[in-house]
Length: 137
Image 1 (tube, rainbow, N blue to C red):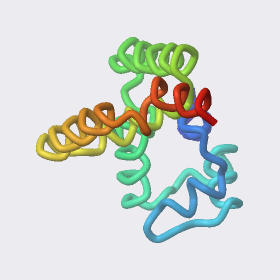
Image 2: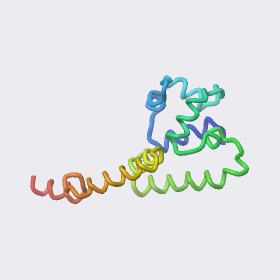
Image 3: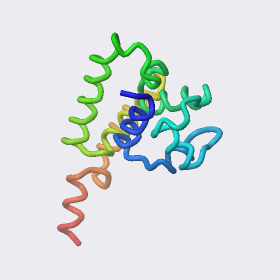
Image 4: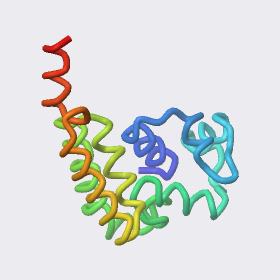
């Protein structure tokens, strides 16, 4: 797989448009720039953008640039399959949640888990609470 095709695949898995992906970078790029990356018209992506993209999608910069595919392809293919299964069973929001979680350090991950645990204790934030609120309406 080419770097451009892989960026497109990761972007689509994340449920982002080209414009949204471009705006999420620092410095931001326009939709046309992301399109050129994905179609292979531009291969010299700025180093800081490669690092940001890798972090955002939970891959290494080498994976993102499709370097050393001989060694990384089985692992990468397994990660892609896993994300596809998560999306199939739990939706795009679950994939986004995993991608955000992957960007956190150990302390951030602990805090995120604590906060999500707290949210599940409040019925207004759970599916069960949502169902009972609809019945009472």
